Amino acid sequence: MNIHQTLATELDLPAYLLGALMLIVVMIFHGVLLLQIAKRYEVRSYLLLAEKKFASVSICFYISVFLLFMTHIVEIVIWGFALYLFKLLPNLGDSILFAGSTYTAMGFMEDILPNGWKMLAVIIAFSGMFAFAWTASAMISMTKNFRQAYTRMHMEKLKISSDIIDRFH
Image 1 (tube, rainbow, N blue to C red):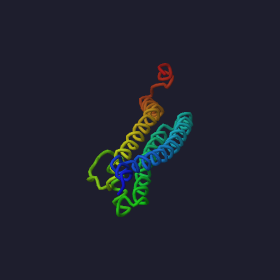
Image 2: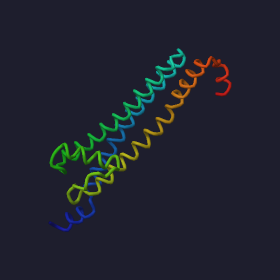
Image 3: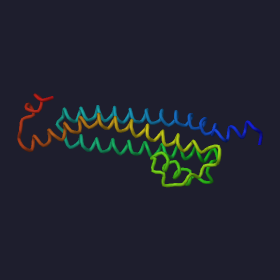
């Protein structure tokens, strides 16, 4: 091995290159899906609120949260496929499991990446942290309509006029 290969391996340069590319791919994927889910929830929940279908807003919210969860699962699989396609791990199952372990920052698997690729685990973890933070911020904004539907549904049960609620919003 020449000095350039040794230096590249010691500095994990291949991991940074693949990691940066995959981070961009995963964040674009995440952003597109997150914005679609949040936009569709917001439009649908406003319509349901206008129709006074408060329970349906809750169902719509929980379906949206499930879709956000599935977005993260798909991102773990994307990372797993990348690890497998670059032959960094011996089989697809281990690749996806390792990606999930690092993406969630749970770290329940030991580091099984070959030398020169160790930093990739940190980049996968960063992508998970970024994605979870982004998802959390979207969910916080989504809860506005969810809370409004919940409050209005209970106000109706208590036979309290929604005009009272509207004065405080």
